[in-house]
Image (cartoon, rainbow, N blue to C red; front, side, top):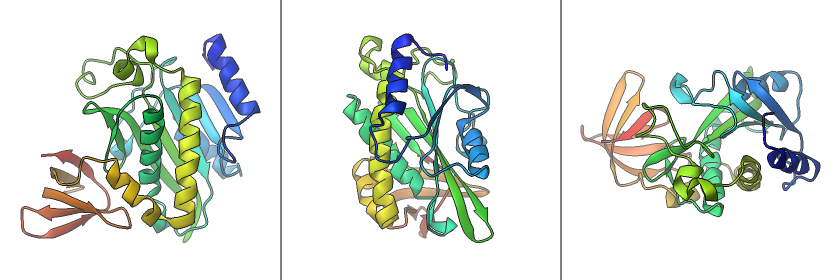
Length: 266
């Protein structure tokens, strides 16, 4: 993995003496991969254990939700995926995205950045995207075989491509480059918070996560536009229910319960 000497020592130390109880004790470091989600899924199919974490220096086909690409330059940011084997029906797995969002929020707060959450998978700072989350499930019949939880966190990027400059940010831009944490430091903070919120999700499901998500989001009460396939809903986002669905009072007078889609403030 293309890291400075200090980062490499820190990551080696993190692998040798984990800061968590179970998450990331098996830590795979890659110079390059198509996407960490692809690699975690491949290892999952080969029988890799619950809690495996893949971290790559760069991704050649990093992606977010709805097939969007994820900017993944080498040497700058965190691109990681966790493999989770959960004892729950596949339909109960999607709110893991909300748990991961809360974890990223709290990790960057511990690093000195004030962030907010957008439903369902974005973490923003100063109105721009700081991190994204992609949850992908693999099933066998009606059984959940494993979940891959992917997180892209912009840590050190200070110059985004022109098309991303108005909408993306990083810890380095929010804190000033000299104050930004190393990727190893950011990874340690993220693993601690991610394990904490995954434990809560595993113990109590979405209902254990939703109140914390609401507290960290500024979306509720705002006017939104939701694109869910061919369906477009506009109205006021008024709540998140106990299963993690977004509730919207539509301009059409109907009450909409949204489980997926692209949400923008209108």
